[in-house]
Image 1 (cartoon, rainbow, N blue to C red):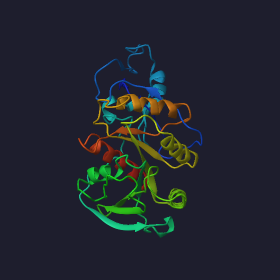
Image 2 (image 1 turned 60 degrees about the horizontal axis):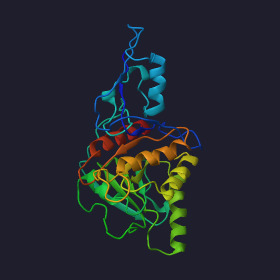
Image 3 (image 1 turned 180 degrees about the horizontal axis):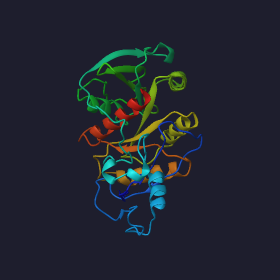
Length: 300
């Protein structure tokens, strides 16, 4: 059996579908998300001398330490083409139909207990105000203004459910930070959003959006910390990755590395991550495929 993994320049971080630790996790460095060819790990049961100094067991440990490996995938069967471009996510047998054919707005709820009640799985999208949350949703469904975009951050103040392909939900959650609302409203937002996370049995995963165009923000790290402590499964979705040239400060790839370095110091098992851009469509199909395997595994 052959194990092939390419090094990439961005940090890669694995997690189980459902976090198993209250502590922050671990990660390691890879090379380029564009899959530029560099030295590979290669080991074969028919050849006891691998092409590198790594043994099969070493290669397996390495893969486990850097990749999100879903259920149904044997570590010995991994090849580099199973890893989604611009991510640390391995695609397994639960990945299925991922394209969005229809989307329907269902309901806005001011309280978690008022959310729609059925057995369909749902994936929630959360992020700091102005992270590009509404733009990402519109990009995923390929329809303008499905989720309201605004130049004024913090316009989403309700839990919004969108039914996709009549089988699962995208849930647009209020953005945190920057919203020009009263302190009382911010307190209420925190309470009802946390209530949603802790009491929603149909929640498959939270897509935690991180703005790659700015350095790591404490409010994002605090949110990730809270989700991890409460065993809420999450995927880091880095947005605005089309802005690869720095206008002010550091470049997005440097910001991503800095963010992941902080996560490494606090997480034992790191969530999956993926690079996206609502402008260029980078990562759209890959993210939808990742979402499909999470839903299908949850729904079995």
